[in-house]
Image (cartoon, rainbow, N blue to C red; front, side, top):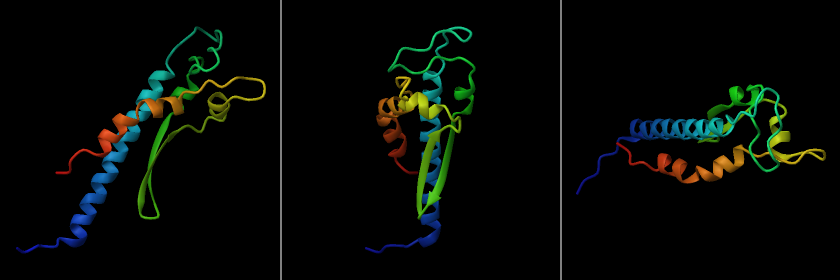
Length: 123
């Protein structure tokens, strides 16, 4: 039995496939999160109940939802989030406002779907 080593070429193909999968997984999670942020209660209507995802008001949070896939220390890292400053207050709450989490619950709900994307067979 003999083995043929394709070395760097095959390694680069595998890394490229890993990146594509992670990009798909982060987009999937972002899209599910955006869907959760799409519940409208009217123009500047009442806030969502504590513990529920935030109601759609201006749409800034939803529009700002973004993904990023970067290489850190030789590993691909995928991120889903936003640069909107008040997103942290909504997710975690404050001393004056109960949390209205949306990203973490979505990540937990979609964990199996993300795992399935990441573990698809390679070509």
